[in-house]
Image (cartoon, rainbow, N blue to C red; front, side, top):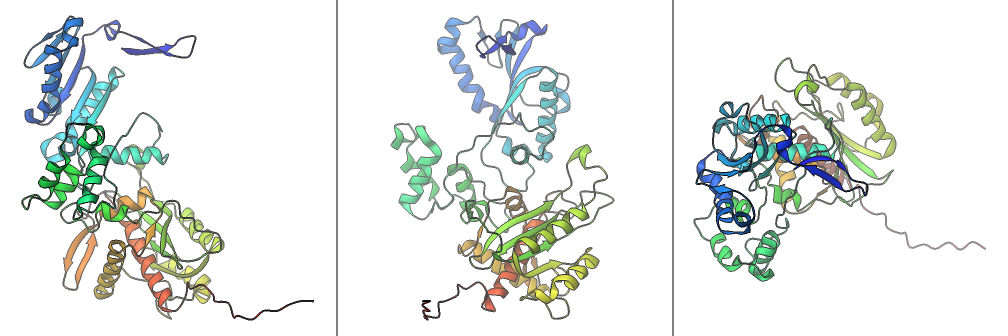
Length: 454
């Protein structure tokens, strides 16, 4: 049915697709025939043996189902060969494996263009994606995230439903793992009256031949990390604390990573992250990223907005330290040092209290700062505000071996998948570590004296 307005009682009204004047098509789409079978085989079974076939004039064949003035079919094809088709609905299966190298991204783009021509819609049914692969599922998730943040020109049209095991699920603990599996499988789990034997899944999960990362993706439905990922999604999610509030005049430190406009590729982001000294709670104060597509053409970092955000942080909170990577922002950082340097109780150096290089000949310091941050995440010594932007940047970071140890980088130098907020968070955390070593952030003890006024 096609949406056709509302009735007198405010209920939606529909009309048949055939009124549009063409043969309506429903497509089951995947990048391989084996993938289409996940949806196609149950559909064919229901069409042949259920009440659908008894009550409707349909003809189910092996490769299509003929319906009056319409057709249901499965397709596995390159993007260009499907151009011009007019499906009214497409089911795209296992889109976590639709990546640029197998033509999946191109196929998805073509299907969506065709759907747009007839006001059609689609549904994706992926497993958990691997961050950094650039799959259709991953990009759809990112689009939904931006929609929730109001960063898209249109703030509607994309619905997202995802069920995964709680981040604190411990795969090594039997009861914890069973509880996580029960959460993921919901009503289909045997403990909830369903048909899936959770103890059998437990055995598969613990099979020595099962890769731990694959187990999290396929059994717990958790978005984990790329093989060279720095921090995994469950690790990062386990220290999320979105309900924590950082109050005005709280004692904090700042981390900053800036960028400048590129003549090609996507400009790196500019990010400002705060960290409360008393409890190590990280929160995103601002991240300026180049918009995608036409909206990002000739985009430049809004310098005045960035400067205003920094000044606002100094006015709103008690900033006791700030570490900033000065690359391409040297003059602005020099201004911050001249204006705020004397009041800072934590300094990078006496000469440059804010300047903290994340590149160059300081590799030993950088490696140690990165390791401190990662171990604090794994050990639960820090928390963060749950910002989707900060989360995305942290999960985008890739491990890179150096002579001094593990450093982080984008998946490739020209990648649009930025990590600048992650770098700013590392700088803020290092500043907080240095603040704590100076005795800052501790609650003041009472002197024990009592004064009575008469």
